[in-house]
Length: 248
Image 1 (cartoon, rainbow, N blue to C red):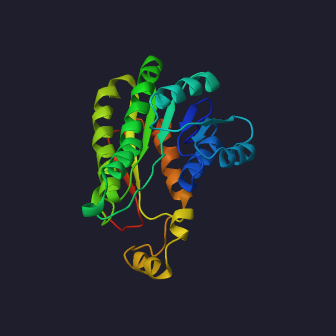
Image 2 (cartoon, one colour):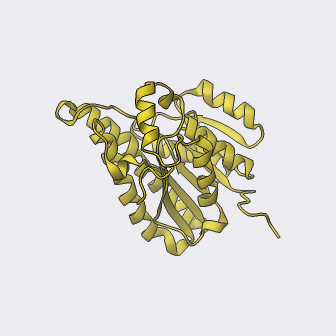
Image 3 (cartoon, rainbow, N blue to C red):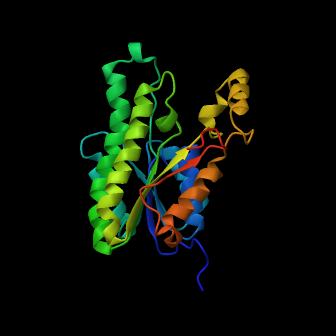
């Protein structure tokens, strides 16, 4: 009997793999037996991760949002792996500013990278998954997409939009054995949160019943489940991993 969450033979693309959460997801999926394409813009960090993982890890740099970049990345991933069974959309950016001062440029860039590029990657990958009659789409959204956050109207809009988009795609592809789900991390201990002041960290911890920030591996565990055969009957859902900060 095969072990639970066995991803042997599966082929995965992880965007934003040079970040803390993306790297943890890539490690987790690779550790479960999958071949993984590590994509991002920071080639040096991607190469370090690829060397760490060893066989079955491939590096493909991509500047998402540039015309044709998403389609090119899917084609190159198929060339490297033979196909794409699992797509993890983790890449994202922030351009924080109070709404009344938020420029059109900062609004458009965040929506384009965090939402439109995710749509284009899904659109390019779904035909491959439909042909194989199996696939997993895992979109990394955020607690902010549910609760909102002052100074992040653009980011919150992109992450809320991702949830609605994922539900729509899930309904379209379910008959072909494909699932589409989101993971909504709360505040996770990464390089980004290390820059927060102690006062802000204390305030955050006071709002989290678990009394700790999340770990990237907390998100990776959910990704392994959503990528596996064991999650076949779960689709159009958002897993909220936030230590109880928002119970929705």
